[in-house]
Length: 406
Image 1: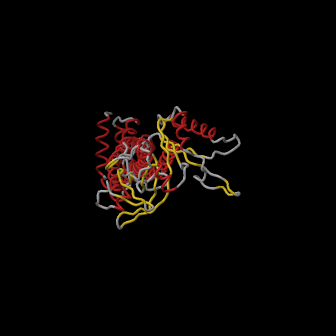
Image 2: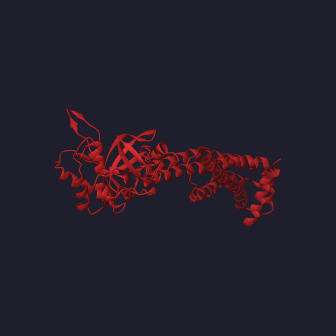
Image 3: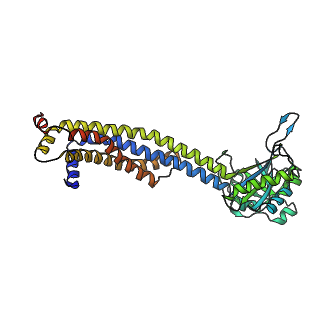
């Protein structure tokens, strides 16, 4: 029998019971729509996490001063005073996988402008820091190396500091006070938002030359951290090993002793975030797939009812020459058509739900073409799987008994 003729007959059979066919398709519609919406939410979360990590910097490693034990008490990270400026110079000189590095230290302070004040984090660093972090400027620019050499009182501020101290006022060229010292603002950074790992506001920050922070604010000559950029992301793991080996040698750490520093590779953070997001996507998609399974059972149920109702019709078709294969194809294609129609509507519902989630909840969603293709294939598979038994049952009917059926 011609396949197009079978499809036309299937459409007519489904159209005879519009309400029943619609209710049967509803399970498939909900299942496919839920899968697409949930996968879109999961992939959106994955994409957002990767963007947040990418916003932290390019091929970046974070070298931090480590822990120390005092009086039997192990202090937290940043307690040691062994990380110094010369360590950064040695990293640039002796680690071939390192492209750039910037020193850093930090302190908390109350910042004053006019009648307003704001408690924020003061970071001391050098101009190359902003290139390593791939952090562009909204206005103005960075301080220069001369400012670092002269310990100049200049500052670059983040967007959160600008909002809380200046409001609509242009901050460039204005003077703020940090620990009663005047600082001229030379640059305003583009907003970066919160970090993926800790949720910390990256824009609630002020940058000053490292020498200015050490000599005029903290009085500490050592470094809290060094930001390092590797020549490429794959090379970041080699750079991590080279830095660890170099610093252990420079700090005279024996083989049995713990490091007095910590090297964090953002590639590890990115991989972990990606794995967590993938696991979340698989979890929500699996939960949503249960409704698709229920929809498939509905297809099988309604096809079994259809076989029972059309027993006499099946007998007539067999009597005039239809083979078991023809009958089986007829009912199997009806099940597939029913599933594909439901799947097609479900795709529209799923995409619509994804945009609704974005607009109402503000979640990031990413509608994947792969998820849509998978939904179509899965819908067809549901029709074949759950339609096979009813189709086989119809094909195995005895024509004589079928003709006697009332």
